[in-house]
Length: 392
Image 1 (cartoon, rainbow, N blue to C red):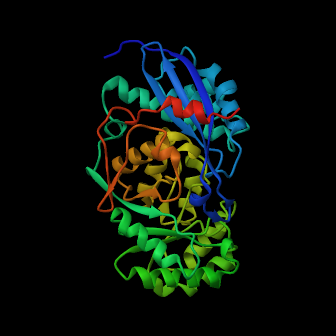
Image 2 (image 1 turned 60 degrees about the vertical axis):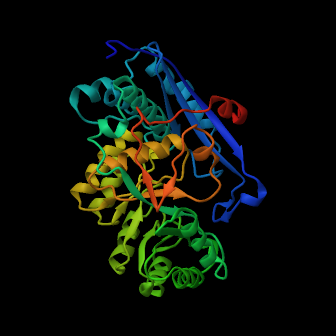
Image 3 (image 1 turned 135 degrees about the vertical axis):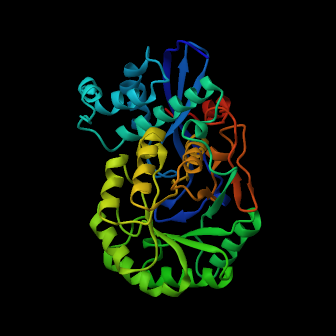
């Protein structure tokens, strides 16, 4: 047991990894030519190092320069000299600055004005690294600190599905063959033009997969309420396991309207920040499945609070895991330890941040991912990889 420990340095690096042309895909985000994320390293005087991840967008959808700067210039001065194991208090310090003293003393939030946007992903990246250090200091995996894993492995779904109507069936069947997946997700929405074209692709996918493979559809928040409702009517007989982000995250009332109009389960959350956004969704009865991205929504600390909301409102938790290895490992630990957790996302697009950033692997066997018992987040970052792909 380490009796005393202090943070000596916090460093965030924008890591930009080009994707070979033959492995790129195109969606409503455009052609995904790189995978970008901000990798956070927290060092201590005890020799322990924690790794986290902060995200400004999905894939190459956003510049990460500003996000890295927030961690390095705003968060670092707040953290150096602090004990990294005081994770909850440090979350409050980062979120409530400069009124963290009042917030901690009085037990309610007094956040700074920039309480959304890139500020929360910056908090998230540091938070993941702090949990990594806490687990390593105790010789325990993060899921153990969150209450223990509920199973030694969890069901995973293959996340991809950009092919056109003629090819979508073969693309998704390829996922089934590749990892034994019994659940797959495809993209729909504005990338198809009109809802009826998305519906045609979903029907083609269901015909190819048969009735026994779970099928999800993700619209990336690109439809209007009326378009989403029309799509749901068109695919009522396709047994969708869920429809993800049918409308923009800025229209939570519209999300609830879509859910009331159809029996298709609705999922959402990758574009939301903190427990407060998820509380609003739950109160509006806007979703059946909450999908926080821990590298965006506020880290593991906030993820536990969001999981409590899911459990209290009798909805389920399926963290958004289109991310690098630190956020994937964090989401896995959360889903495995929380009563509302039930399934893991596994990206089938080109994802060097998951497969090349760290030395460990997260193999899919018979459609399941093992919950590893390595200390902390259970990852060893390849720092040469970070340096090679660092972007200023």
